[in-house]
Image 1 (cartoon, one colour):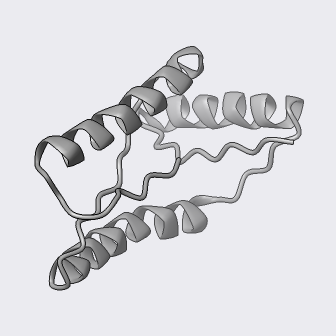
Image 2: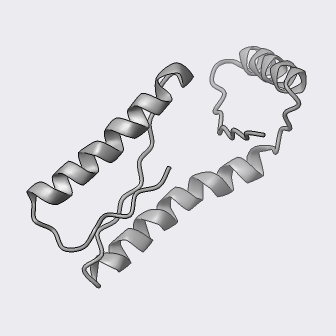
Image 3: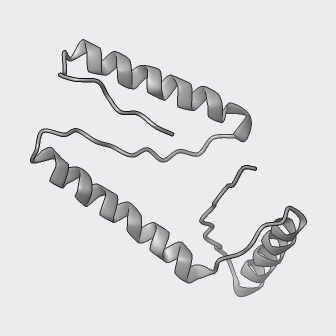
Amino acid sequence: KTVACATITFEGSAAEVRFQKKIICELSAAHGGILAGSRVSKSGYDLTFAIAYLRDFAMNYNILGESFETFVPWSKLRTVVERTKRTILSEHKSRALPGLPFVCS
């Protein structure tokens, strides 16, 4: 089984937002999805800031770290991940950094 998670922001007039939410609810239900609500989405959004603080903390110990976010069609996702990993390894080597990078997706 695979799992996908999305944080969605609705924009527009009240009527447009109601329509957008209705469409997302129908699409989610058709594929066995669940809607977690805005509180969970807000927690996920806040987590992105925590990740940045962890990265900054780790740099005090000579640990480089980064997280990536992107928008890409599902059909191109594997290519983007593979090229990103390849670029990280190449940049690590070209800069003669010690150790090996830990890369996961």
